[in-house]
Length: 454
Image (tube, rainbow, N blue to C red; front, side, top):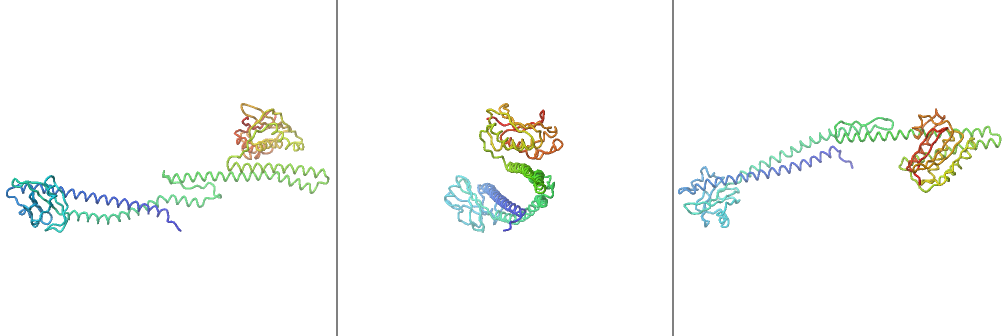
């Protein structure tokens, strides 16, 4: 089912609200006018009653003679004088001798002024309103009844109602038209942003939505969407850089592995040559496995915090496990890998992750460091520092601050790059509420993890 456009829905909602407001306003004004006309009629009856009371108080005053005078308008008003027993003493023509008040109403009028609505009376075809007040005639009490037709007020209300029924819909149509135009003006900026968003893609970096300087919700929406595009573009660029750098890191061991295998196929003639080719191929496969583990860890940390299985880990056992992985490789490279005893030192950590971090440091030292590599643990200020030192040429000073960046290059310093290794070390250390550091030492390089002591 096709939904109506937002502009039409806004206009429809505005029309309903406007119709409700106009109806409520019209009803209020109608009631106010009706109340005002009724009050005005009551004041008119009161003034007329005062004038006629003075008339009937005179010895020769007569309502019948005043029927066509200035106090009583023929066809619109009338008056009647009743005795205390309800007998008609005087009246304007053509009321006749029929009293206008009942006995109870007559009794009430003798105590206080009484307003009563009456159906048509003789000589009048419309409803009327009467005011009954107590007066004195020739020294005797009586009740003066003064009435006037409500037809003029009814006609005034009818005309006002007709005007409301004509002006209300016209005002509603005009208001809806203005609302439709204003909604279009307000949504024009949104439509402009929509059209721009439709053409933004990964192939158009830097494109942003047009933001109107309106200072309202539309401007804030545009700014928020542009900030989101900034974050998405930055994430996409990181992914592209990651893929490019990962490809570069994988290309070297794969190329070397291919070269070793091709040489073994073409040139190896003895068992010793084949063993050397297999040994170096195994070394490159180990590098590929290490890269795969590093890439997997990065993928996991991109989705959130790194999951850890914490347990007490003895440093001596940890060092022994790491050394067993690299002794054969160090021997083949003509290097030595050893450790200093860490008696009694222990940390609470994920053993596999710590082995991965230390393995990355040892691997980096084997590939780029000197020929002597040592693992050492130091207890310092409530933490345990796990050091990997070598006697190589060290880092360039400009490389140390960015050593833990992903795929940081240090070609000028060591003819290679730190790759993912040091970045992974930093991630694992921070996941254990610790930190990772590198520094140039005398001689060589010192890289270490600082972890909370158990």
